[in-house]
Length: 95
Image 1 (spheres, helix red, strand yellow):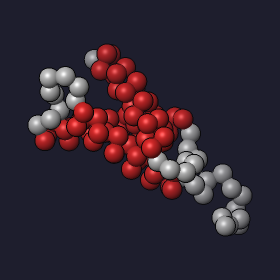
Image 2 (tube, rainbow, N blue to C red; image 1 turned 30 degrees about the vertical axis):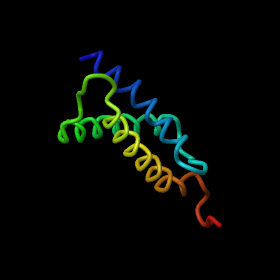
Image 3 (cartoon, helix red, strand yellow; image 1 turned 60 degrees about the vertical axis):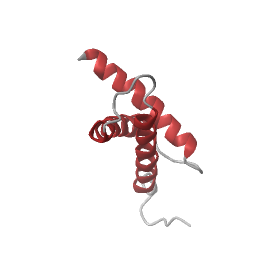
């Protein structure tokens, strides 16, 4: 149980960082948000891969990892868009 949680955190951090590297432009989100998005993408991507029958293979699970990274890119993009207006004083518009 503890090992699963640790691997989810480590794998989620790696997947989140890869998503930020793949996504063009600058994402104004914190490292914690990146890791959380990566963890969620890793868990959901693992479930989707299992449902598709490619969750566990002999060797490296490339399809599962690709699904996880695609979900993380989408998650980082959405998180950056949702949080882009935070931290500005009221009444100031983004131009």
